[in-house]
Each structure stands twice: as structure tokens, then as C-alpha cells.
Length: 249
Image 1 (cartoon, helix red, strand yellow):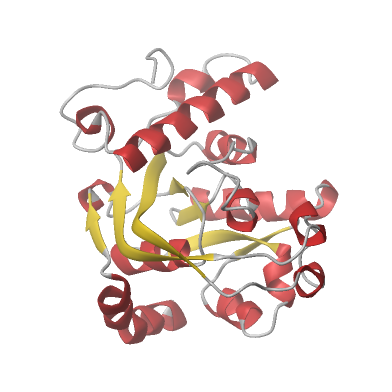
Image 2: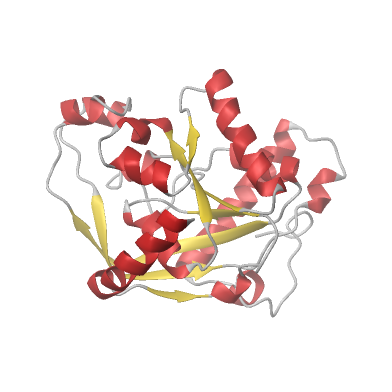
């Protein structure tokens, strides 16, 4: 907590000035209790923007590759990030179990359901890639609401290319075999936080793969609506009711 808040205090004003970060819907963040925060992910600025605009401590779920990169691993450990293996199996289960425990203890856990797909291939992905489904299982097992969010750039700036061989040292991803990678920074960032979504309707029935896929797909479309600024009365201001179980997105 101390390292997290120190970084917010020291670097927050600089981030706001450099990237013109502003926010909408931050009143949707609960003052206490556990919740799973989900968001799109195309830039290293995404977690920093959320940290800057959300007052509560967010325990981000981060890929295990980041925990071996110099400086990055120090930042991850100091700010209480949850390590998630991208290889699956027992290592991945440990990270998911830790996220569930944090949620049950009343913490905010943040996750990027796209994984690193949009981050690694921003030129190939149209705004928001497909969502992996593990995040939905986390929320259902912990019995907490999901808070959808979108980090929306006014413009994107390509960083200098990074040789694929360098990236492969830390991240095993097909994009690293295709040549230099160009990662993104943002200009004029808007963080939009949606209304908490109750998942109790999905807990009443069998937790089948089809049900998880349906829930994941609906939540992805909610994030896309927030990104595009559509249906905000349903998904941000709460002016219109929305039931994730019965309503279409």
C-alpha cells in the first residue's frame, strides 16, 4: 500500500500533465468490498492510468513474463500485483486462486481479459481483442461484481521498434518471431468506469463452458460500449437498468 500510494502521489501529477488523463464514472467504484475491475489493454499506460484515476488500491493480475524483466518486476512486486503464468496448468491456477482470495478479502483486483494480444499486436487488433474467460470464473467463484472500464486514447503514438529477439527473451509470443515490434503510447487519455455488474444470475444455473463464454462475450461488448461512448445510461450512469444475465448488449 505504501509503495502504491507513493507512486500515485509522486508520478500521478506528471502522468496527468504528460498524457492529459481525465476520467468519467469513477463514482461507480465501491468504497469498500471486493470487485473485479476489467479493462481493455493496448499500452503500458493502461494500468498506470487506472491507478491514477481510481482511489482504491488495485491488485492487478499481471503475466509472469513481467516478473523477470528488470525494473518491471520491481514495480510489480512493490505495487502488489498478482503473478499469472501464461503457460496454464498449476502455475496459472495459483495466480487465479490468489486473485479469488484477494476478492473475498474485500480487495479490488484488476485484470485485462485480452491478455497481451492487443498489447503485442496493436496494429492488427481493432480496438479490443477477444476476451479470455478465466476472469469470469474468478468473479463467479469469489462472488463479487464486475466493474467494466475502458482506457480510451485521443490518439496513439508508436514507440521506436523493439527487435523481436529481445522481446522473445521475456515473452513467448508469435509476434516476436515476425520481426520488430512497435508498442503504443497514448495522448489525451480518458478513463471511463462503468457501473458494477451483478453476476448472481449466472450463479443460479450450472457453470458450463457455454455459460462462461456467454458471460465473457457480453462483458467484452460492455467494455466496447464504454470505449465507444455508447449506451452510457445503461453502462456508466445507471440511468437505465441492465441485467447481464437476461439483457442483450
